[in-house]
View (cartoon, rainbow over the protein chains, first blue to last red):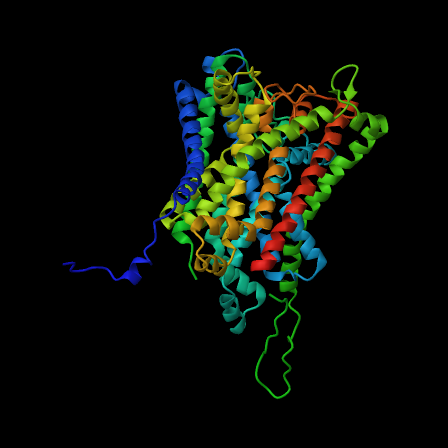
Length: 296
Length: 313
């Protein structure tokens, strides 16, 4: 006596379960993401264990020395990086945001020159950073005669991160719905009043997130500085924008180039400091995005 | 947003809807904004200007035939040699290794994130890719040189130089995974739902839908992502300078030390080649070649992105 015998028509609709290759495919996809995760974990763990013996105040209280690794530090690199980032923030962020406002709010996309500007920015974002080093060397250091100074480095890096700032600021501005602008214009505000009082305040979280990510790119950049005379051993902090300098990533590069093992440990310790700064900035950016991003 | 919005001042019989007086402030602001946007054009012009003059001077001293027709490179040696092929081959070889690593891993990550992942899984893996993208290349170089190379020396049957193309290429590959993954994911997310639903309705499985429907539909975007990644790999400097070295030998052996174009620029540019010397000009000639190669790839990539945007958005 079958109490609940299933009707024949329903049996036919029951699937045979997913074929095995579906599972394999899914596992293959997931494991390639796992590779990225494992790599990241390995990189952090290795650098931390390598650098641990030198991860103390000697690192950020001393200037570099090729003869005495035990009292050698990266103070001048940290100071140089702070100078460069400060100046880059002052130069690249306003310029980038203004350019983004132009492209999103004013530019008429049917005009050839506006399309040229857009295509050009997309291209510049992917130009190798060493080519920016050539720009810095040929035009800023030599032709403008800024020399191998903090100013040259900051201008070069500003130009390098400018496309990134523009692209992310444009996305933030584009996310503000047109109805906000239309409401403001309908009440009699001019276009600039609309942008300044409605669009910009609404897009600030997005712009800030993009700016922080752009600046963290600038902090990690080393290649252009190789061309700008920042490669030499610098045993002093910059005392102004016309002072010579070095940056932390380049000091790490120099330490790796030394043959003695002590310097590699020092390099690992300096990398931990660099990564800590970057992770902090990245988390700040992600937090800002999650906390303040408006859903319209 | 069209420029210039008409303002009605006050109601009245003879008031036109045209603006009553010109607003100079608004116009000035627009000029300022345009000037900011033009900085990017100035940057490109600056790069071209920086490269052009020394490159022309270089080719007035070294013939095109010698530059592209010989396989011996050593502009800083005496007597100097200007056959550019060794550094081109090194660049292509390291780029190829990187692409072999990054395309399967990056594409698989993109398919998973776009087609399979739940919101919670995305929340874990997206930041991982973002952090990976944010790691300075000098750090990848250090890891390649002091961890990956010794590891490979232990497990591989052939000999590896302490600085070699293989581990540099592998790490450049890891570096470009986030580029491939995030841009391909954007392209796949832009594929309309209706295509997937049509495929499911015809009885296709998730895997068939992903591989045979979504992937081809996002093809131009994926090509754009891969080309952009290749361009980044070809121009990468710090990883190759640290892990692949500066020796320019004409070889295809991935276990050998080799200098790429970017590594040559870095080493010659950080040395003290006197301004105006032929060694100094060589930096710019190689720079021009690298700039033209990457610029062509970037331009093509931007074109492809535009194509898929036009189709689906």
